[in-house]
Figure (cartoon, one colour):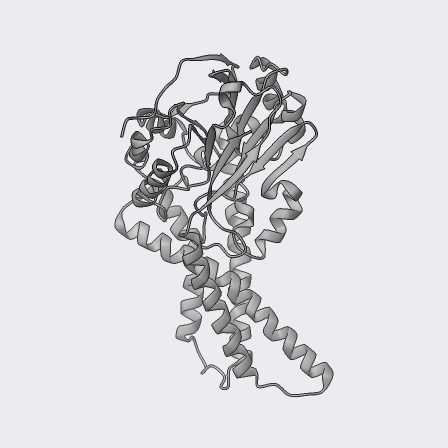
Length: 392
């Protein structure tokens, strides 16, 4: 195939300041401490449920179950820290196992809660249950949910939507844009997964491709090799990229250089005009600061009387984008919650803008679930997708 076309474009940029790295490191450290503390408590709860519902008590002293659960309780944080520094075979396998276990723990925790709820209901009702049989059934359901989640996460669907933008250039009516987000290239989704995504795009033949961040997971990888499949992208009006929060986990310049070398246009907090259509891209770091985000949009030279599209990783600052007069915002980030019950928590944060096509004032917003996964390589209650957007 031909490499992605780079059409003639007009552009406007806004200068931005860079935050100090120690702020990000501090936030990550706090996040790690909180997550590890929660994981330790959950594993203790799972063990306590196990010994309470099994027919025979554990023998005295330290048992294999105790050692195993203790090791598993720290496996994901340990694997994540290793993955941030190493990309060898051991690091990749360790991370995949730990990430899969993390997702399984989610369902085991719900199963354990159900065990205690049924036990309490039986005690209050004055009837007996076979605790061992009930616990075994819940364990089986948790394992099945995990296996389903792994398989479901590998099946990337094609979502088709139609949008009607005011003052859309006549040349864009009937054209199709592809939206790809949250691929999370790293120790779970690698080169083969990226090739599959680009191959799907080749079959779909969109006119333009938008990548709205988290193309990379943030683990230590050869960014250039993972971006190589994009050289086979043949969208006539090009492929455009902005960063997500995971590209900010380390120096993002390596990621930006990699996608540029693969023929993808990086939008550096700027507006470009593609055959009369305004396309604005703002990186995650800058969009996270509302004052900076507003300044970038104000200085980008957006013409409110003409159709415009904003690429912004997260749908968290919709009032700022709508105020700037943008017609359509394309985002990812949420994963739709990825796995139950985090689907519910995510909806509590982002509301109707967690997933799908919505309206915010005069602006349309589409938030995609993304193509990949973060953490557990599972999806339960959501599905991965590539979005085809037809302009009517």
